[in-house]
Image (cartoon, rainbow, N blue to C red; front, side, top):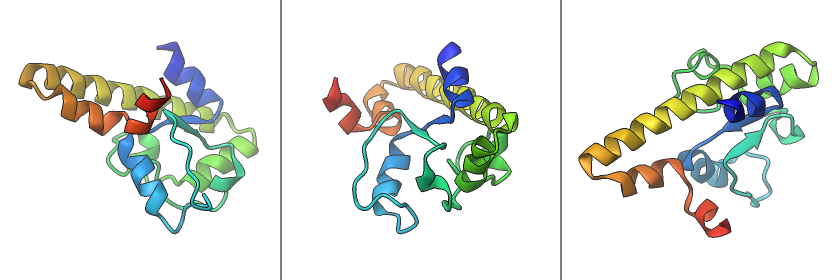
Length: 128
């Protein structure tokens, strides 16, 4: 329980495979074609300054469901507003809960490989 909240307080948002696939293809992403796949993104980075997309449109957390953009969350961290850390901590806990629910269902239904592909990008597995 420490990891998602500490990460959120420091600007890190946990993201799934879909995020990285969309990031590679999005003209809105300021990535110059280079994307380093990680388990999270750091919204303190300047590349999020003008990113007006929601972190995860499928996430039911307060930040995502209210349509708060990556640019707004970036602004909160740059302005040293504690709300940014609170929102990302909530997003990360929600992310972990959704991932664990998927894993439990995958074990029950025998579809754990498909669940893994949804939550863990193949490039992350290559790094280990």
